Amino acid sequence: MNRCQECEIVTEEQTCPLCHKVLSEVEQAKDRRAYPVYDQQEYKMRARISKLAIIGGILATLICFLINVIVMPHFLWVFYVAVAIFYLLVSLNHTILSASHLGGKITAQVISLTILLLVVDGMSGSVQWSVNYVVPFVIIAGIMLISVIMIKVRMKWTGYISFLLMMIALGFLPLILYFTGVANVLWPSVSAASFGAATFIAMLLIANEAFMTQLGRRFHF
Image (cartoon, rainbow, N blue to C red; front, side, top):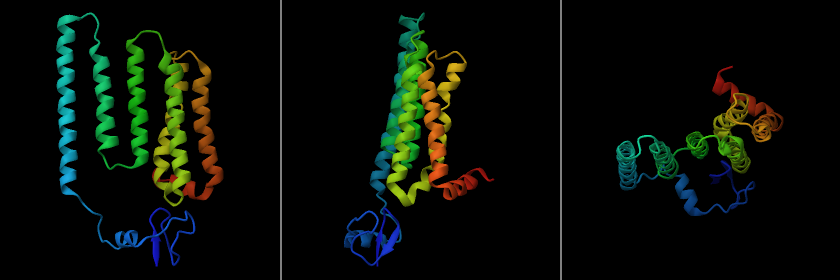
């Protein structure tokens, strides 16, 4: 019997009947392993790089803060540096070096990028280019990306539900920013909220029973 890791089915055929992937002997040998391969050296290297990046980011922020206070105390440009370093650390430690779930990586990228854009836009005055346009479309892109991945992975789509719900909830952030007066262009905010709501409704219609079961498990109702 052959087993397809992507679709999680067992078949006597040499190719998967769902994704038509060739089930080689190497993959079968991998399936028979009791535990996944653990590369201790690689893990230590990633942990070391992560720690060095955090220490370097903190030191760079502190140095820039001292320079800012001494040279230009009337304008705290250090916040630009701090939020940029924060985003780079999230990208390196959680997205590149981490073995976290792909849905979690996408969600973390969208949230950290949103924070970066909001801080930069807030520090730059009343331009509002991020809250009006960039943030809504970044959120839409995140929802769309997770939705496409859920369709592609098929049998493993339930692992992405929590992250999709987080992204859908985040889709209403631009609308909140508009009604609180932070943003002043309505249609991008409405687009983000509408796209999130449409995605939620589509999940209810396409995978009604399975989707509601997963919602019950996560929210205990």
